[in-house]
Length: 411
Image: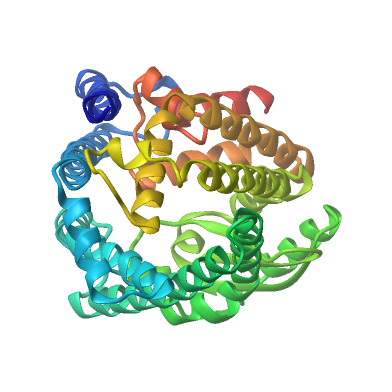
């Protein structure tokens, strides 16, 4: 059974790496071509910058994926999981305590293993191409805060879930689902007020005409905006973005200060109109309900499969603790659900197209959104030539050139 599981895992790893390699080769072959729709925005110098950046990111991503897959495979199938599980179980006989230690140990190990990749990505690739603006001190401060938050929140959630498993062995899947869903909803409310300020300084947007324009547009869409904020994203990166936060009727608009320096007011309004489209078309709500349904189904499957004697045999073990069995199930689910990736990506791209159409109807000027996307894509050095198969598998948004072409046709 272990050999079959290893074969399936290896096949999926090869498929993932193969898609990344196809995308990189396609970029190498087509990276010298300026798409006709972007000739006004992309000159030879800009195209060279885009090709160098996207090529370097793609090669780095390929290496990162390969290392992660090998480390995970060795841990699962090379005896690492069994040795780690036995070590943790020897520290304490408490079901909840050993489970929390098991989870925290994996989190710490994963965070430490990611440090070299994150540092190289930020201080070599991003800095070489003019995006990184953070100091080593700020980077480490962010890393320590985010890691500490992750450890604290995950330990509390794991302790609560394991306590429910112990207290209700026949129905724990239902109570754990409720716990995870409740915590996720709570964090959605608290994050803008408690977590985001730990990393970013937010202040009211004071740009003549823009704040009023945002409020007028959101009220026209039937969405009440509590605050319009500017975030100091330029302390860390020159990449730009804008988003809505909050649930229910009251939302907050957050604009990166880098976006304000790159776009006209009309283009910013068009981008925000697109984000409003996701709320008005209920994309966010539907996605939350689907995730809840998947959470219920996943918890019930875990409840049904965890006791199976065959589960540890998938990785060559004769026995495994409860948290070790959950890890095996999570990796198995990720592996077996890989073929469904293009379906979820296609669903997301459909929502993006629908939000684009809503933005055009609300804002009234398709060219403003097209020009804003062109500016976002070229300033962020986005890949102008993704391989079609790679895009179908992984792109949550339509490829940039296709999206701009649709909008300019509407204009």
